[in-house]
Length: 359
Image (cartoon, rainbow, N blue to C red):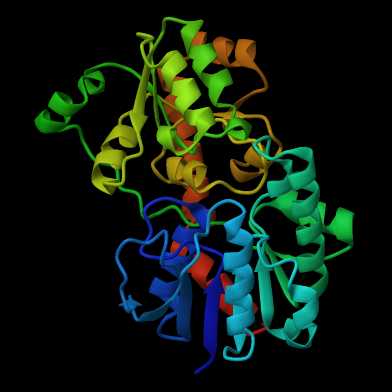
């Protein structure tokens, strides 16, 4: 049985995060075919499990966040190249050690996710560092996976590299009806509302979304995110938390609670701009939610041009103010059909299996 290592995530079991969700479902569906080890950060994962769903968990005592994430990913890569038959490397963190490990490049399968160097949260100097790491990873990896056609086109144009197109699954979400206890906890469930779950960072257009919903009176926006994890998040929350048309909730790790809030919104709003297929957008599609998405190019690919799109505050306000229930229902139905065809975890895992086996 082939030994597979998954690197580049904070670890599993997962609370939030696209790569973490991917790792968890690859473990769930592929553990019968491969002996899988997931590298985890003992600084970021409070519960130190030895195994999870038949996968072994190996802990590195370094945080996966921020600048230390480069060391975390690099050490994980150095420790794994000799021991495992194939290595699934998620993200850009191992870019600066991979040239020194080129004799093992035939083992490495790369998924960079989005174009991280484009994120507004990075300084120009950091962006250059991340872009260089990306270049080295693409150069020295044996196989590359793109999670979005926009990323696939970018890799071909920028580096002349072909890649396998494999998105994310989203069918782990469940449509859950409103309960009396949920209304007590979240009174806005009694009314029409828009919803988004997101990481609170600039490239997700957080402030643009908040300002847009202040400029209309059709419905409030409920935004769930990690407000207290950054100076940016704390600043924005302090600025907008007392506005009557905005409901800002801290990160919700109880999936049932989160699914109740998502399932029953009138509109799902998506502001991500940095590229790739975003898991929260795929999950919204799997729930059959009508989606208003930022026109990034990547979001249009993910939704197959079947959602509504905006580029700025005025365009989003216009979409909200011209919102019609039946049109929204039809959009949701179309997106759900697409999700059932393209974003099912069992199918996604099987595509990864083919890449691992070089099929």
